Image (cartoon, rainbow, N blue to C red; front, side):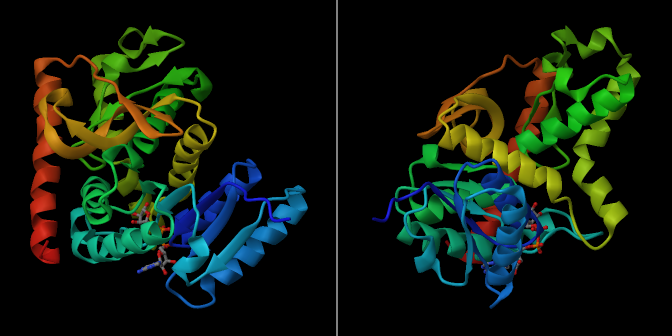
Length: 315
Ligand code: APR
C-alpha cells in the first residue's frame, strides 16, 4: 500500500532551497522534492541530504529532479529559484532575470499541484510574489512571500546583541517591502513585553533600524560571492510549519492587501495569520502618520517595480 505523505516541493535547489529542505525534513514536517534546472544537481543534493537524514535517524524522504511531474500533489510549493544578489547588484536589478524564472516555475509547479500553497523566496520578493499570484491565478490567500520573518529576525538579533539579552525574549516587528524601504517598528518591538524605547535611547534604536534595513546587503558585502541563505531558510521553514501544522502563528509575511493599511492590489509585508488555508487573516497595526508615510513609500516602490516587470514580461 502506498500511503500519501505531506509533500513540500522546493523549486531551486541552491543554498536557500537545500537548507530549507534539510530543515523541513529534520523537523519531520514533510517529504521534500527539490527541483532545479541544472541536470544532476538536485539529485546530488538530495542524496547528500538523505545521507544527512541517515545520520540524524530521520525517516523523511528528499528527492531531486529536473521534472515538474515529480512535484505532483505538493501541499506547499516554495520558489527559491533564480539568481541571488551580488555586490553592487540591488534587489531591483535582479528583477528582469528572476521575474521570468519565477513566473514560469510557479505556473509549471501549480499545473502539477493545483491545490498547493505557494511561498516565494526569490528576490525582489514583493514584486515576484505579486507576479506569481497573477501568473498562477491562485486565490491570494494561497500565495505569500517570505520577507518579514527574516527582517524581523534580523531586528531581533541586533536588539539582542545590543542589550546582551537572549534573543528568545525579544519580539520585533518589521513591515513594508523586503528592501531598504522596509519599516522596522520599534513601537511594536519588545523585550519580555517591555518596549525597546524603555531599554535603549532613540539614537541606538535608529542605528539598529538602519542596520536591519540593510541586513541582507551587509551579508552580501561580507560574503562577496553569495547572499544570506541560512536565516532565509529558517524563516521559510517557520512559515511552512505554521501552514502544515495549522498553527495559526502570526508572522510578518508578504501578503495581498485589499485596503488594509490604506493600500490595495499589492503584496507587502504585514503581520498575518498562517494556517492550513494559507493566509487566513491580515492583521492591521495602528500606524502613526510618519509610519504610514514610510509604508506608502514601500507601496510606491513595489508598485513601480510591478509596472517595470509587467513591461519586461509584456503581461
Ligand atoms: N528553474 C529551476 N531552478 C532554477 C532556474 C529555473 N529556471 N533558474 C535557476 N535555478 C536554480 C539554480 O540552478 C540554483 O541552483 O536556482 C538555484 C538558486 O540557488 P543559488 O544560486 O544558490 O541562490 P540562493 O542563495 O539559494 O538564493 C535563491 O533566494 O534569498 C533569495 O535573493 C535570493 O533570489 C535568491 C533566492
